Length: 354
Ligand SMILES: *Cc1c(COP(=O)(O)O)cnc(C)c1O
Image (tube, rainbow, N blue to C red):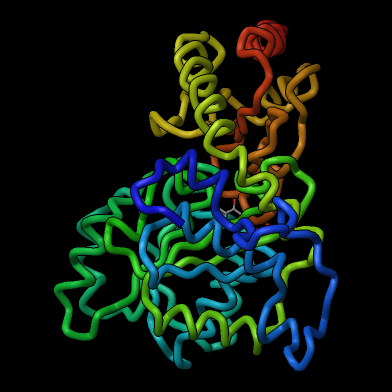
């Protein structure tokens, strides 16, 4: 692919067949064997097309590679598979509940030592660099939208002789909002289930790295772990990726607009919005009020997951894994509906008790 293309163009042109006479889109190839090649080890053309396109969006350069997995959580297991037993890792005290579940389990089983750090406590992250083997960062965080200073962590890691690895879950920001590899991170992971897929119709995850050794190790981890993506899912994820820059820009505009309006609504006690991106969270006084808003909404779906073309809202503390977040916190995934329609829906629900 040509160099110096904008992200918007790369999302459209990457991962397409280049030979004359080939279909414009790599087809869905439902294959376990490709001649003597076995799909779990060697991949399939459908996975490779998606991997090429995600790699091209996340960073430029011949050494950049992506590996597609069965889900976002499968990438967590693959990254942890690179660590020896007893390794120490630094993780945010608040992050996606599923990721915390994997880490808690690894700690309970005695496989890893886990150090939990408040996302915004940059000096604690920097201080951890002396002892940890790997940083697992998620920024912005699901569902609190807390930010971690990725550059400060990268710098602290690089100053250590034992060179701890820095991994960033970039699911919320997408490559359009933030490029951790350019900031010096070693590995980026995505739940393509969310914004990359963008239509709430698949589960898939990807790792991306510019380090060829790590790229090969992640590929090996997939081969060993066997968490391979489905053919249809990979095809749908690539189809979703084609419009990601447009969806991300449009939904981000709506998110900024709604964040500003929610901020001055009397029923809203706090808006969490990192000033960019398609996700925000807002808080009401208690769980009961938040639940009432969720059931009064008629357009915005009261549903879990996020990143689809349809706006959705969820009170996260209802889940055991997120029971520590404020009871009245609503995670709000902004889609592509008209912002005025969304605002009317929100105001009607908020005013029903305010
Ligand atoms: C959903 C999510 C994951 C897990 O991805 P799955 O595809 O559901 O396995 C990981 N990180 C973040 C930030 C997520 O939102």
